[in-house]
Amino acid sequence: MANTSLDWTRGLGDIAILTAVPLTLDDFRADIAARSHRDVRAVRGDYAATGLAGRRDDSLEAAWGGARAQVAELVTRLFEGLDPSRFAYVTTDARSEDIYKATATGAKVLLVLAHWRGPGVAENDLRLGMLKRIEDTLPEVGTFLRVHRYSDHLEDLAYLADALSDWVHQTPSLAITRRTALEDAAPDHVVPGNCLELRDGFHKAEDVALQLDEAWSGVCELVICHSEYLALALKEGRDDRLIITNQTAKDPFRVLPEVREMLLRAQLSPFAYCDERASVFEIFERGLREHAFH
Image (cartoon, rainbow, N blue to C red; front, side, top):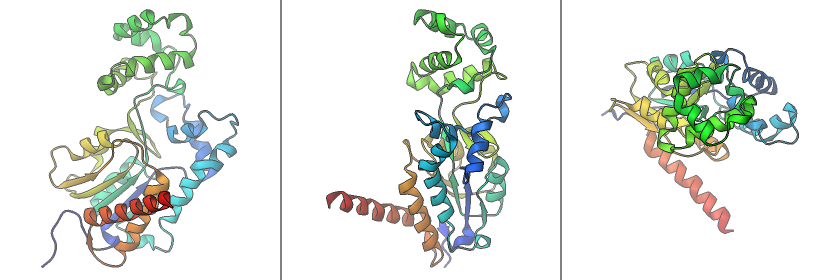
């Protein structure tokens, strides 16, 4: 009898993979440039920009040559020795429309490897003229800035970004709501936060969920840091969708070899994806414990 479980995977033909991180230095450069685009709707590159944060050597080549290049190599290795045509869908340049295209294939497993940017406010999230718009719409922001003595330095966008971030995070449970309120108050002057970064920009969780083919059911593994909020949007009202998520940061040097192992196993025999994924996780976890012991 055929297995009818939601995550029953017959092989690579039941797996769709979307990756959206820069894979070359040229991609990295383009993302850094796009991070400061004048049109807030055309911005991307938060993943690349965080690779520059806190570096004394601010050259792009030096920043790329560290962890970002290593992650790119691991992503490329995912497909080593595998025929891309055997997958239900594969792209290493994932854009929002690829979510629909991948799920419309009928793939039982959707793997999404991308960057999630949180609700914090960075200097290059702000455009000149935004403060008056925000204070007119959100008087509590102006009150916060005055009470906490930020007001004397607000012409400095870096200082203003720190101040607004403090307001956003003042009450952690309200951080997402407050970040959205800033964007709604000055939609042409504030780059969206709390978004999935794909190769065509930042996308709100609710918009990502709408890109899924309505008929799609199966398992979606989010190889994404802090992906619980996105997972809730993808899962909402759908008992026929299983979402593998996490509340904290993903370690790409741990999870990408695990995904590679899953793809190799998928070539050999059918399996229930969630059970097999748990087995692979445990094998790698045991390997780490044994390495630490030795």
